[in-house]
Length: 233
Image 1: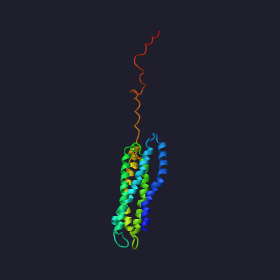
Image 2: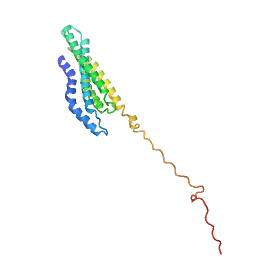
Image 3: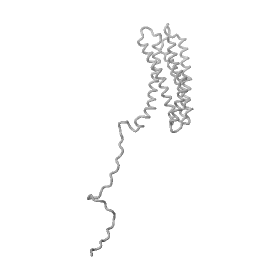
Image 4: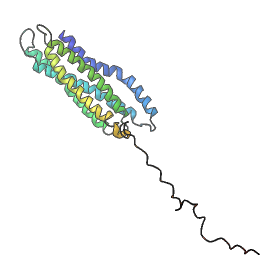
């Protein structure tokens, strides 16, 4: 049972990112780019960089969860890990963390050299997809953790695994949600839209027409005087 849980929560997000994102996200990115008034000349390279950075990110989360799980699970006994099993688990965790960290750091550095700030469409697309995948894993971790909490009897290591998964994936879920709010909602909030809908900005009133002549009569027709009239004969 424990092996199935580890496979589902660790491999599931990686399989989702690797299998679903390339075709679907690229089509969405191209469709959105055609609707923009200015064509993004670096859309393809940014798509590849963000794609591999997300794979490395989830591989790092899996390694961190395995590392914490190995650290908090006691050793010895029929329901615990012996020293040899812990040593193998530590090697596996660092085997995830080191390549994931190297790939993630390299791709984030290359992303900064692109026009990702001027054209953030690809970044927002991958941030939303990453938030979805991480949220699913975090939600699964919460279910596993509370199932272990209310389980009667021994959980056979599920409680330690659920605690490690909650610590890693729910923390990443919260940080990604905060970053996504700053990137998408915060940049397109009321300040970018001219204020909330309730604040109606009144246009300035037109200038008043020129005042009429004093006395209410017609304005003067101009300077000079009328020619003198001939006296009656």
